[in-house]
Image 1: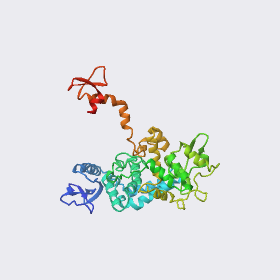
Image 2: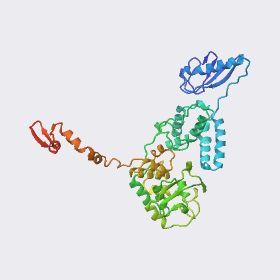
Image 3: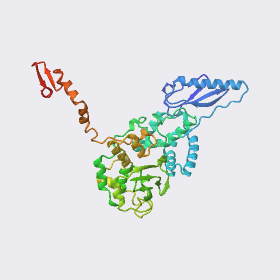
Amino acid sequence: MVRGSIQLRHRKRCSATAKDSRKCVCGPTVYALFGRDWTKIGYLPEGWRMADLGEYEEQLADMRRKLAGGESYKPAKPRLLREWAAEWFAELYDVAKAGDVAKSTYNTYEGQWRLHLKSEFGDTPLAAITPEMVRRFVRAKIAGGLSPRTANALLTPLSAMLTDALEDGLISSNPCRQPRRARHGASRRRALLAEVKTDRPKHLEPEEARALLAATPDPYWDMVLAALATGFRRGELLGLHWEDVRWADGLIDLRRQLQRGEEVKTKCSSDREVPLYSGLRVALARRRRAEGYVFANSRGGPWDDAGPDREFLSAAYERAGLRRPGVLWHSLRHTYASILAAGGIREDVVSQLMGHKRRGTTALYSHLFADAFEGVEEALDAVLGQASRVNTASANGSVSKGHPENVADTRSGQTRPVAAVLAE
């Protein structure tokens, strides 16, 4: 479409025509006419309107004024995501090398970018990425065979890149943060991607947790119990030293995690103290040591992700009949938070024990057990029972003054007990 000195060039998949751009389903490139040459000056977002062209017309007028005044003027080249990603990953590599971010995090993000995100978003300008493009990407990955959880997780590095671009003033909003979400983890993308939300529970019910413990082989039993009784992530459990267990104080100090045999900082620097549950204390005391890893591999060394111990938890889930997609180590952490919430522990305390920087994150881990509503009737009846019964009985008569346990039955003209009226 040409509007005066502004030209829109649509992508190949777009159904717009030269005469009718209302059918546009892409983010077209905006060109401006200088003399005989067309110069790229920007992009329109998907779902654009004619009024959006006003900004580029003003930009074109400003460019022409400067040229007429003898000034040299070169329009700013729109920043493509792949250009920004190159700088962002170079910085993230330095951060990982310094130990402030786990190397495995860098490797995961780089792999997700190279294998999935780059081909879809790499040649798109930062400002042209929209929530609808993000939704379409996730739907396509699910259609290709990925689980909703895995497809959704692919957005983490994209969201982190766009968050930093937003802070640097390169974009006005982050399409992966609607509503707002934490930068790495603590994701709130569920509202943005409601169509891919799964109803499968991420936690274990109390009887399921007990069944899993019963199905866990003896060499690993106290490890699973520790995950359920501390809420530690797997890497945090594996990085736990005997020196971190404060037997006299009844506490466990968390100061590090183990990733691929290497000790690194805890995620988001979430060092913390957690109460030593008495049942876990008894289990660990049977093999108590002065130093070394609490949960070593079968050979006594640091846990090896590629070793023979890797699949024991999956096998335990299978034996207990609890295996389902998305339920493995992290479900034990969800279960820990749910147990505390069901036990009446305040949310701010649970948040501290989980190592969450944002309290709202804890709500994503605290789930209702199946029997959560048991006791609601009794609790309400203890406070409201007498008043509600008297008021209900009043529908058949008026409450006798000074005798709230009786009502006057207008049909018989006699005063009768409330219970008798309700029983009719």
